[in-house]
Length: 336
Ligand code: FES
Ligand SMILES: [Fe+2]
Image 1: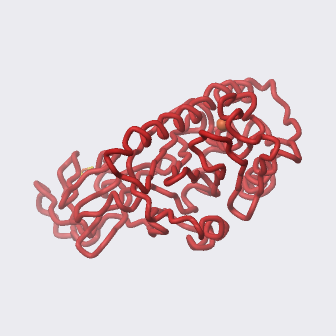
Image 2 (image 1 turned 90 degrees about the horizontal axis):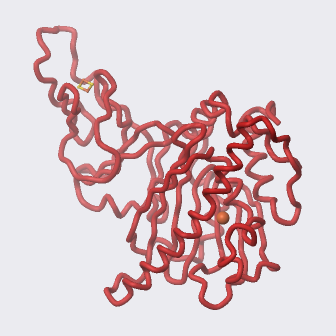
Image 3 (image 1 turned 180 degrees about the vertical axis):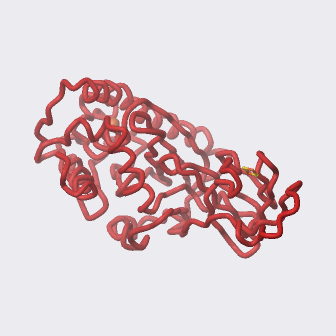
């Protein structure tokens, strides 16, 4: 098995296909549903550039495109907040939390204009074990997309962990370079020397399941990780700690830039445990950041035209092979 060809990581045209054929058609893990606990709470975010928001309405959650039906302005700023109605900042049209258009100020005489024609466009959403998923035009049911993860996590009490912290990190490499890197432990000795010293690297195992790659290694004393890391097609991850976990979403900004949205969750929310939690978060983010430089340099080499696809390790790169197989299937097998 050979690595994907460089154009997969550098071509704006292939990226456009990724957006419509992968990101718009799959369920995207947005973060903890607990951040929408109170009526009016919302999360506004991007899915590979497509703006959406989820709001806690009177009768439960609702999800919409974060796009004004008038001339397309962004309605809510990215992030979390609380509101009763959604007012476009541009010309001040107002929608209710159910998406119905309530007010169109200063419009003028227009007998053909029907408010009911201009409700917000909905997107699909679902909560799975405390995690919020959104899909613009899903190809499969969420349960199907998560079948392997369901099995991997059935004995982990993930919905009992409390969300504590979100961190967004942006770097200049294609989302697939970062994913290739995430789904192998092969780079741990070279890129993460301290992490390497804290696991039994000889026993590192990578297993590609349908829609999920599981990596595991026995941790030595003092490692915050439990030694099990999961990646789920197409772009989210879950890693277990003692008494908690992190999740991440690998979200493309464009063909050469990626945003990571990390969330941290813990069982213990006590004041006494605060320092330990903060240390876990800091240590974890330090490992994440160690990957950026190598991803950036790889991106440059792919973009330079100076790279021909090399071989993938049968011992350590089954996850990479699986991810790339899925990508080849999406692009109709036409691209090496
Ligand atoms: S673009 Fe939103 S009201 Fe005009
Ligand atoms: Fe890494």
